[in-house]
Length: 551
Image 1 (cartoon, rainbow, N blue to C red):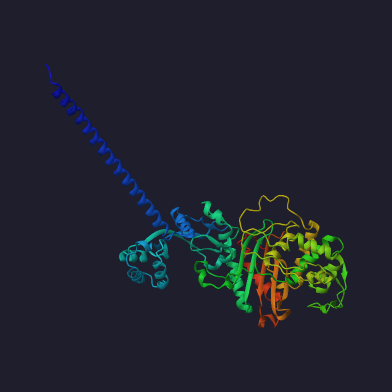
Image 2: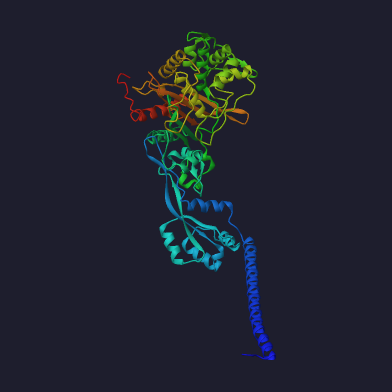
């Protein structure tokens, strides 16, 4: 078959040209698709950048709020706190709290009006102002009741939400307030054991066991309350202490507060007199002076001291409250609580030994106790002769009640020094305990402390069958730069039973007044001692100590 030249050329052009047109069309479509993809990509980037800019300009949750949400979402639970017998003294209950996201609220005024119908005690002006700022997390009400939750649900307020929380509860209310402390609104411990053991309580599910016995705590608080009323005192404190373990079995400071409603209590009521109040110990310090003197070997029980004439220190005269007007032996100095005798005893031993003895007892630093509320003692930096004299009978140095307890317990623990503790079993495995006095000196001190209760200023502390040992102390309070004779701190510190003192009792009354039963006297032998006697009567059977029928 033949083709003409013209026809064949036309056919070629027609075929090739058609293929060209199809390729050109495909390339055109491809270019359009690429352009569309680029436009979409650019548009997407523009949207992302715009969103980032928008979000960066919005209010953010504070770190505090983030922590709150994280804690609540993690279902933060605080372990129970129990006393030494397993009785719950602090626990947590699940609750519901309310918060708002201002971004989700359609009408702030309407939302506030709805909240008013449910919560009568809210500061609505404050909430309105916060919501108007546009914050995404605003607390409305913590720990609401089921009735309030149902009422709020019925209001159907957009932007108002619920969150699971827990609330710390103290079943015994005031009883252990200064020991337990309390938590803040975020359930974090901020006082007492709740604060010092916060990490332990949060991170370990098992209960935290205290050394406290709430039965003894009840007895102590009751008798201190009676003592305050009977002697018209402005406050009181008391401690029950196990001598051979260093465990605090009861610790009470009055006035106290209810940790369930701590916002209603004054700072005065939250002040722990047992660990924060520093005071001159008065004649209870003669326990330290006498133990130091006997341990030094320079003084014996039969040593004689001239107490007939007062001592003069600068412009001050040191006199005895009950002057005997004759020389006294060491036994008589202690039994009669002679200031002059204690001063001469300390001077005979020397200031260097006295200062070191107090330092070894831990009287220059805060006690090591599981509480954040601890106060350091006050003492002179320069130990002059006047310091030796005044410290010997309880002036010139200020200690907390817990310091006094720790010091006397060390002497009654055959000289072994233990740090006090509020945790049961903490001191069981303590090794290498430091000794402050020998066992021989310990026996002499028990004899002297028993003598004071039998024949001296502490006779009203005696309890039939328990053979109490102890010492009273009365110190005038310092008002400005002057001591007030009508404003006293009265102490009793002692232990029982005598054959091997195991439980130490400390009682302090703040500014007790004389009454008809005290025949016009306001010294510790007339008020702190009888309060201690009543406490011992109540706790003896609880501690399984059988009284001696012959006593």
